[in-house]
Amino acid sequence: MKTTMPAVQAKPNILVLATGGTIAGSAASAAATTGYKAGALGVEALLSAAPEIQHCANVTGEQICSIDSKDMTDSIWLQLARRCNEALAGSGVDGIVITHGTDTLEETAYFLNLTVHSEKPVVLTGAMRPATAISADGPMNLLNAVRVAAYRQAAGQGVLAVLNDQIHSARDVAKTHTTSVETFRSPELGALGRVNGGVPEFYRSSLRLHTLQSEFDVSRLASLPYVKVIYGTANDDALFVDAAVGAGVRGIVYAGTGNGSVHKDAEAALAMAAAAGVVVVRSSRTGSGAVIPAEPSYREHHLLDGDSLNPQKARVLLQLALTRTDDLKKIQEMFHKY
Ligand code: ASP
Image 1 (cartoon, rainbow, N blue to C red):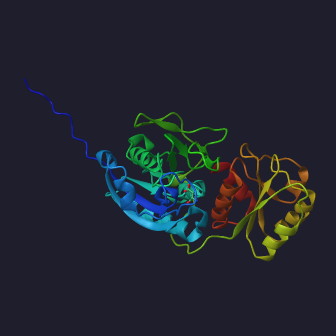
Image 2: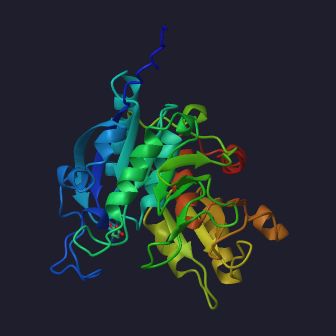
Image 3: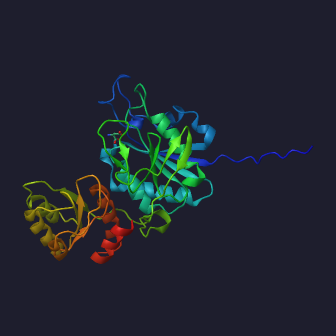
C-alpha cells in the first residue's frame, strides 16, 4: 500500500533583536529581584537560556543596544524601525522578536506598530525578574514570543507584546504594576490571545490601523518632533506648559484628570500655546477609557482629544503625526484611526 508522507514544513526564520532590559539583567544573588544591572547579558546568553526556541524556529540574534529601557531614545526607535523594515523586506526573515526592558516596552511597541510596514509578525517581550533570579520569567517569555512570531495567524495583527502567556496588541498594552510578573494588560479592551500550553491562540484582533496601513515613514528621518507629556493635578498652573513652549516643543500631551480635564490655569497656558502653533492633545491619567469632547472651551482653544491612547502613547502618535502635518483636523483624525 502506498503511504503519503506529510509535507515537511520548513521552520520559520526568526530574527531576535536585543535591546537590554531586565530580561538581560544580572544581579549579585539569585534571590535578588531589584538592585540588578539591566541589559548586562548579550543576546546569545538569552537564547541559550531557552534552547527549546531552536525547536520551533531557526533563530539568529542581533544586539541593537544594551540599555535599561527607561533610557530609551528616539534615535534607537528610528534604528529599530529601519532594521525591522530592512529585515522583513527580504525572504530570509519570517518574523522578528525584540527583547526589551518592560518600563517603556509599550511605547516602542506602539512606535513600531506605526512605522514597520510588513505583515510579518513583530513581537516584543521582556521580563520582570532578572535572568539570574530564581523563577526568572525571561526564558519562557522569550520562548513564547518566538512561538508567536513563528505562528502563521500572528501575521497582519500589527506589532504584538507577549509576556506572562498573554498576547497583546501594541496599541492597547500597558505596564500596570511596578514589580509583579503579571503587569502587562490591555485595560478595558483585553488581550488578543494567549499562549495555551505552548500553543499560540488568537481570540480577537484590533481594528485600529497599523503596519501596512500606516502612513508614517521614518526611513529618512534623523530625529522626531519634540513632544512632551505634562501631568495634570489639583492646584495645577502654567509652569510646565510655559516651560515646554519656551523650550520649543512642537506638541504637548496633557495627561488630564478624568476625561482629559484641564485645570483652568493650565488651560489658559495651553490655549496660548495652541495659538502659538503648538499642537495640544488631551489625554487622561486615569489608566483607561477614551478622552472624548467635553468642555466647549477645549474646542475653542483647539485642544485635541486623545481617544483611548494613554499619555505616553499619545506622545508617540503626536510625534509621528507632526512628521506629516500641522493641520489640526488631520491630526485629530489620526487619533481616531490609529
Ligand atoms: N528598568 C527595566 C527596563 O525597563 C525594567 C524591566 O525591564 O523590567 O529596562
